[in-house]
Image 1 (cartoon, rainbow, N blue to C red):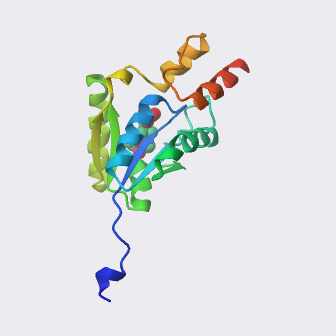
Image 2 (spheres, rainbow, N blue to C red):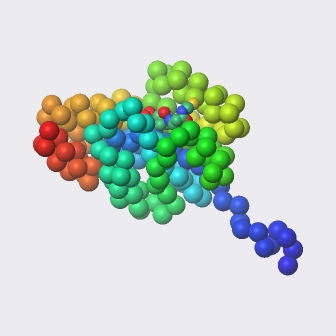
Image 3 (cartoon, protein in one colour):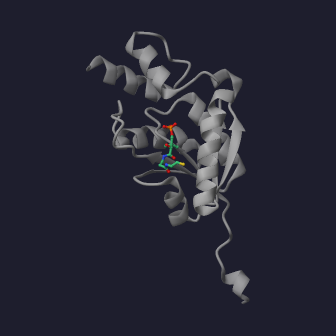
Length: 169
Ligand code: PNS
């Protein structure tokens, strides 16, 4: 047996990072598209202690695992630290991000260049499906908190969790 035959097949890995508080149909669209391009897609729920979320990190992970289960090659994890360290620890060479509009580009470009400068990791931008170009977790929470209909913007499971959480406030 040659050395190359005994080696593990090289898996193409990418990460979709975010806060996911909670996951929306816009996030899911990007994760689903990444899952068709890569062998393994890591969804990283990045922990930001200065931001108090509506959902705990464990709740976000639980929702994400349920709504991505059908893809088969998506692994959901949380991480406290730099995204480049998440990538380094798992041998992930690529970050996949959705770009909703030109307004996203400035900050996303800065992060992509910073991450590339720190560790060489590449960022690939996927244009968001126009159906979701206005969508963000913050807007979903705000609209839902005032009784607006967000059923078309989040998976049914997330809608239930959101409705229950907001009713308790
Ligand atoms: O869903 P969000 O809040 O827009 O996601 C932003 C996120 C979590 C992807 C970004 O803030 C991030 O990568 N945070 C991890 C900490 C880090 O690596 N910061 C330096 C970025 S250049």
